[in-house]
Image (cartoon, rainbow, N blue to C red; front, side, top):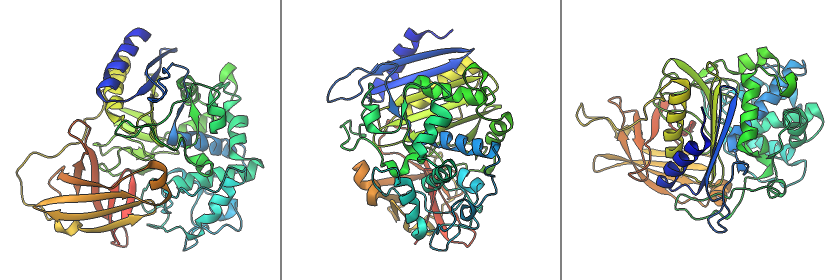
Length: 464
């Protein structure tokens, strides 16, 4: 049913059209695995991509961290209602110290409200995660815990620290002991000196140039540091397809925990939630939600679970249809691979699961009442990102800039983008940097205290 040669030919065609240097596609369907690879791992060295090559999976790492948290809950060593203050006594969380109000559930569902894109490098030592969370005493809070959804890398580093404290070892070691080892994963690592032992991908910028920094700091490991081969990522996915059973029927997670992780906990705004810098999802539908780690989307009459991951010039995608037991992952060494994901996954799930991926967002047709655009003008800012919105010649312009440590890591430069209305509300827009790339949604709204915000890449950015 799964012809590797056909998959390879199609992956090569779509990747070449999108100017993606190298990619690996993995599919699990009908109790059968198929892998396809194309291109090169590094445009400078021209090393060929193979199906066992390892790529950074970025924020798909969060699913592994969430799984370990649920293992601790299964062991009655933690609960979803445990607060950060209870799990990490003495830690100050945020400028307003919300540690006694932020729970494990808030962290798993990105609803803590704390600033999520802090990429401080606290060194390579085993204490780097502990040192990172020690810096969160000054983090801003965009909204009260539980009041809204805003993608939060910092929250997952906190979860990683909770795992460290309970297990009494670094997060990386718990990953090996709790998941990588029992799942018999031969090509799942966290550090560059481990990745270099395999055929490792190197990231590339949107212009095709190789990036200068290979990976993210170790300090943000629980949020996005795993490097893995496609087979290993599919094996992890099968843990959740098989009700928590690993190889040989070994139980690694309770069936109840597997199920509750896939239940919606918070609705995500219909527009503005598309992946980017670590988020995951499929914009365009009002039925997108977050579970405990998983992102949930409606594809036709099905709930699809998954996650995306973006690091420095690498992008990864994972989607699962639990009903038909079809899973697919796409690993790429490009910062701009969404077009490959959209095309290939639409075909894979259409052919194997009989479902249609939601339509991509786009600008609304011309006409309709005049929109009040000036109300959105101003500066929107949070750690690592700054957006200046203005109206010029009747159009909304968004000057988007990456700041701080993240700007240095990603070599990002500011972009002047035009926002096109996506509907008649005057709140939802789309943009794109080039005519041949998919549209990205962005929306505007108000927090509970009536502070205006911009919602992009799954994140709330308040107006200053």
